[in-house]
Image (cartoon, rainbow, N blue to C red; front, side, top):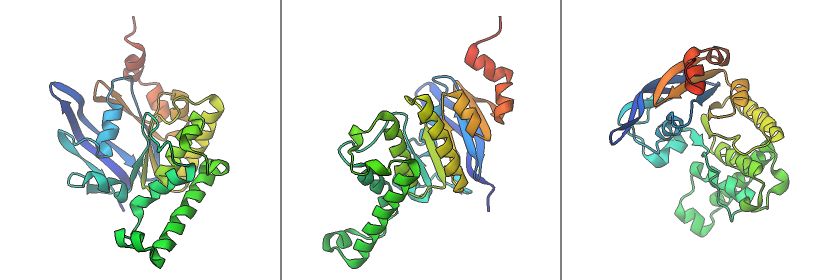
Length: 255
C-alpha cells in the first residue's frame, strides 16, 4: 500500500501570463492532517482546484493512492475518494440538513434511472441506506437535532459543519477543507478542531487551507507553505513556525 495518499508532482497552473502555481510538489501521508498555508494570493485555492480536478493543470500530475488523476473525468474524482468543501459555503439552501447530506451520498449509489422510476426493492433499500448514512453523519458533526431545518436557516457555523457532513457521506479517502473556520467564533473553532481529529481517527486523510494559524498548527502533522505560487517551505508545524522564509512571507522583510 502506498504510504502517500496524495502526491502533487511538479504542478504548474498558468492563466495567460500569470503562473498561479509554479512547479509545486508535495505529498500527504495516509491518515495525516496536512495544512496548506500562505498569504492571500499565494495559490492555495488554485491548488485545491487542481487537486479536486476543477482545474486542469498546465503541466504536472496529481496522484491519489499512487494512481494518476490526469485522465479521470471531473465528475469521477469524488467516486475515487476525494471530497471537498469550498471557501464560500456551497449548500442546497432550500433543502433540509438531511437532504443535503443525502446528496453527498448519491455519488456512491448503484441503482439506475429505472430503479428510481419503478421504485424497485433494491432501490428502496439503497434509499434507506442513504438516509441512515445521512443521519449518522448528522450525529457525527452535531447537527442531528436540526435534521429537518432548511440549510439557509442554519447559523453560519452550522452551515460549515453541514458541508463537512455532506462531504463525509461520500466515503472519502481524502477530505479537503477550504478555510472551514472562516466566520466561526472561538467555541465553534474548538469544536471544528475536535471534529477534524475525529475524522482523522476514522483513517481519513485531511488537507486543510486555513488562515487561523492557531487552529492549523494545532491539528496538522505537516504543513506546506506557498507564496506567489511557489512552495517556500514544508515541515512540521514547529519547523514552519520558526522558518525565516515563512515569517518573511507573512510579515515582510526584517528592517
